[in-house]
Image (cartoon, rainbow, N blue to C red; front, top):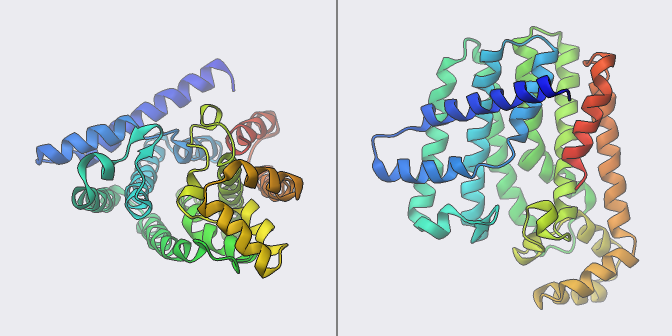
Amino acid sequence: MSNIEEQNLTEFLLEVKAKMVNITTSENIEINNINEYVLKNSGKFIRSKIIYLYGSEIGVRNQKLIELASAAELIHLSTLIHDDIIDEADLRRDMPTVVKKWGVKKAILYGDFLYTKTFQGLNSFDNTDIANVLINCAEALIEGEFNQLKIKDNSTFSKQDYFDVIEKKTAVLFSGVLVCLGIEAKLSEKQISELEQLGLAFGRAFQINDDLSDFKDSKTTGKAEYKDLMEGKLTLPMIFLLESLEKDKQKEVLKTVENRNFLQLKETLENSGCFEKARYERQVAINHCIEYTERFIKLGKLNELKVFLNSLLVA
């Protein structure tokens, strides 16, 4: 990106954050205290970046991009609040989670508050089709959370089961916001379908990359090392390993996880080629992203966007 484009993106993200504050301001002081804490530590705004970069290219007005991005980020934040409750997580982005800092009851209420405020904000959309897409995304995300519970410590979970789960848990919001861009830009059904596939591919690559980052130093990834394993989640490298083993060996691996002997497990995953298999699946998904991106982005910006995609999807 040029310096001007980076500046424009920075200004856009500041406007998105301001819109999120405006939407979620409450008359309740304690809600506002939690809200200030959450929005101050609200992450990389990857969904907003995707919305800005693709939306700008297909001619969606900036104000519409801000409205869509703020809604998407609030939906994402509300799922993270509930995620942390389910996982009994103490930290997120090296900061205490809402559930750790304020307790389960207030965390549940705050997550519900974010959902409510998000859907109130959807009233500002002129096109009800866009609001309906985001509502369907929120429903799918909740279903994805239910499905994720099946993965925990389930040695029979297959690669296809995994992809089915992450499509709803992670990829659906990426695809949903890109579909919304297509609707707003009045693209053809074929083009909107291509944007949907682009979002699903991005979500797959994003989740696999997150799985791989579970085995890397938190200083380079921003994610606590072995976080998923400690929460009992079966990531893609683990699924590849378990699929390759007989039941007795599967039990030994799961015992290794239970005993938190993660260095031994990491060595096993590396030597068995399971990391390499996961990296291959990530690259397949990235290639699909690029393939669909080529249909929408002008040649001059294509290389820049390829670099951007790789920066987000390869930890």
